[in-house]
Each structure stands twice: as C-alpha cells, then as structure tokens.
Amino acid sequence: MTEDNVHRLWTDEELDEGLILMRPGELANRQPLAEARNTLLNAVRSLEGRDTLVADTNPVTEPTRKPGLLAGRRWWLSAAAAVVVVAVGATVAITGGDHGDPSPQPTSSVPAVKFASVQQALDKAADKIHVTGEAPIPAGKFRYTETRGWYLVASKERQFAFLAEELRQTWQPSEFDSEWLLKIGQTGNKQWLVGNEQTPTTEGQNKNEIRQSGEWRARGGQFPEKALIFAGRGAGEWSAPTKQQLADLPRDPQQLYELMLKDPFLANKPRGGGVLAVAATLLKTGVVPADLKEAVYRAVAKIPGLKITAQVANLDGRKGVALGVTPPDGTYLYEIIVDCDTGEFIGERTTQFTPGGDGGIEGIKADTVTSYSSVHTAITDQAGTVPAGN
Image (cartoon, rainbow, N blue to C red):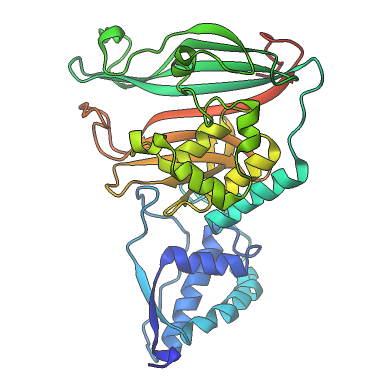
C-alpha cells in the first residue's frame, strides 16, 4: 500500500484546527474559517475528479449541540490530497477582501476562535505565568481570595430546585505560617430552576442542604476539617495544602499528572471531573506558587478527551477559555475556565446533559448548569477587610 492510498477520517473540528494553526491571523473567526474549509474540500474534489462542490457558507451559524460532542460530518482525505491545505490557506489570505466590507454578525454567530487546541491554550497560560510569576504578598499585608459559588439545592419529593449562592473569603498573611482567616456565608441569592419563592421548602431535609456559615482562624491555613467541608473543599494536599506540601508537589508536568491521577479523590468520586477537578481544587485555593501553577496547566493538557468547550466563557462577568471533560456515559460536562492571556484561573462549572439531573427532578431541563464558582484574588491591608472593587 502506498502513502497516496492511505486514507484518514477527518472531522470538521480536525480540519478547522489544521487551518487555524496554519493561518491563525486570517482565520480568527468562523466566517473565513468555514470558507477556508469549503475551499479546501472543493480543491480535494477537483484533485479527485469530482464535480460536486461544497456550497458557500454565508453567514456562518452552527447548529446547537452539546459541548464536547463532535459534529456528525466526517471527511475522507487522502494523504496526497491533504497537501492542498497549504495552498488553500494562502488563497484565503489573498482573496478574503473580495467579499466586501464585513457586515455585522448576527448574535447567534460563534465567538472568535482564539485557540485551535487545548495544548495551545494551556501552553499560553503556562508561558504567561512563567514570565510574570506570582505577585508576592507585601510584608504585613494579606492576599484576599474570594470564591462565589452556586450549588444545587433540590427536593424530588417537594419538586423544587434552585441554585444558592455562597461566598467564601480567605485572608492569607504574608508569612504563610501565620494566622489565616476563613469566612463562609450564604448570600441569600437564588436562581430558581423548578418552583419559585412561594414554593414551600424545608432545606434541612433536602437531598442537597443549604450549607452552613461560619468564621475560622488557623495558622498556616490549616482550618478544621468541618470548616473545609463547609467550604466545599476538605483536607489534603490539593484542597488545603501546607507550605511544605506546596513545595513538595512535582514541577514536572508528567509527574504531577500521574500524582493527580493516583489520588484517592478519583476513586471516591469517579464522576466528579477526574484529574481536571483535582487540578481545579488546587488552583481555587489561591495559594499556588507560579512555578506550580505553570506545571498544573501543562499537566492538565495531558488529560485524555479534554476539549475547548467555549472560546469565550463568561463566569460572573469574567471571561476566559472553557476547557471541559465529559464522562463516557455523556451525562454531564465539567469545565474549568482560564484567562489564557494572563494565566489566571477564573473558576469551574458543571452542566447536566440529562433532564432531571443527578436527582431525577422533573422540570430540570437538559443542558442545565447545576453548579459553578468563580475565584478572584487581591491584596488587602488586614484580615477581615475586603479590598475595594470586590
């Protein structure tokens, strides 16, 4: 069998990725990208002596489909025919101006494509952290880490479901082993999924209870396990690392990935997002040094099946790239959101694909976000003081 006879099955996504990698400037959004793909396919058809051409695409909108799932179309390209990709990329760059001035895109258009692959996105975030490092906490001051989390409160028997907002605040002193402050509070804000404010609820008897509030102080951030559970974390090197544990975690991405993969968390919660969730647990502590954060991003890029699920994801007003994994049964999507231009970890979210969600509650629609959180850090003068703008 010669190389010219070898065929490979290409998806739309794989074709797009190849085109973007060659011409990232010219193919920055979906309209010229679709035109480039069609030009490529028509060139292949011409080489193969086929007369039927792919119709022009104008304007571009994409059918709604669950994040993380591949489009249905696949294309057969011979190894020889695939060479025309290079020529097609050049053609698009030259002829792009022949379509006249760009018209305003409809609101349903897909956002601009910034990254062609998970590796590209996370490499940029890691490279940025490598260059800028982590801003140290000035002597006598505190790093304030604020996490706003929304979690599901629901009752199958009483048929109600809503997302409740929780505010978690941590003040880390400039001397790591000095006294930290942790506050957890319920804001009272709700997003109703099933029912409304008039729906009778008895949160204390629900499958998912309203979490408790409180205030704790502890040296080195080693708060009691009860407090960490209330904060949705738990004890351990990922969720409440000591200074020594942070120093001991490997900076080699492969070693770090293998360590996260072996963590008991994955055995106890196999459907909790896997290694991606372990990485997020560490990142959202707000205490990860720059060299470790860089290694975490490069380790996350090794997760099988990890995909860019949104080029521009908005989480509580902050924008970043969403990267997610879906389990083999396809029931949910777990994502982290990263600002790859700064290297900042923005937050995480979970979307249930099945109606009713995990609890089987009638009225919860498919593709519903059932939990999410956003993280923000700043410097403040003293523990208990919230910096301006937060």
